[in-house]
Amino acid sequence: LPALKPLEDLSRLAERDTSPLADLGPHFASGIPGRKWQQITAFAAALGQVRAPLLEWCGGKGHLGRMLAAQWHTPVLTLEHDAELCRQGQHLAQRSRVEQMFCIEDALSPFSEQAVTERHAVALHACGELHRTLVRHAVAVHAPALDIAPCCYHLLGEPTYIPFNEEARLQLERGDLRLAVTETMTAVGREVRLRDQEMAWKLGFDLLRRQSTDDSYRPIKPIDKSWLKHDFAGFCSALSEREGQPLSEAVDWPAAEAAGWQRQRDTMRLSLPRHAFRRAIELWLVLDLAIYLERQGYEVAIGSFCQRELTPRNILISARRACAKPASA
Image (cartoon, rainbow, N blue to C red):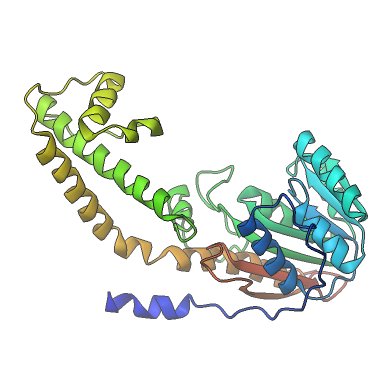
């Protein structure tokens, strides 16, 4: 689509400079999935120097915080609402002999603002309202530094995106925000095949249903994935029973399945122009955060901290307080 080439050029980000990391030994990453560990090390290498105690925002078991505590020999407070994850994380921290404490607290609670005070906050893939809340807290308490790799922009409390900057006029609904995170670059081949199969079979079922009821399109609720182990006829029978929509007794199943696959290919082709805007929407959201932080007295840099094959959510926002008060004060 040549007309969209300028959009691709505008959406290109520079890679962040990285620092070498100390070798923590062969057992430090034990129990961490390989892709997750690669994301953690790439994020850590792109942070630069740490000059303040760290706060790991929505940290789960604290893998990132534990790694940073070992790298920088600095205390880390990990904020996580799941008590069991905190218990497991504390055990891992003690085993690794790092200074890491866990706080069982909701990141959206009033307490979370206090946790940010005088700490360098880090958040690897904090979703939607969670990373937005961290930005607000950092500004409110004049936190010295924060590094955020945002994720799941559509997980908000409101149906539409409310920009941090009043002059930002682009209106984005939750569906637009979801578009920014629809890539499957990290999915394995089997996952992609099952996704395509489910889509094709649902579209094939929809054609059969319309032939039986002469009705318009109806959305289909999520299915039991075990149904995909059947053949197409078995899949449609299970779905027909669940939906309460009987199908014709005389069905040419091979033809119906072929029609579903054709509709799947047509649908994917029709989605191409829309998908061309995914990265542009994401960058617009990231720039909204970055500009707001700059206006509040931070020096801000954005860039990619890893290849998109490792994670499509590879944008790092790094902010360092440059003055005692916001520029607008």
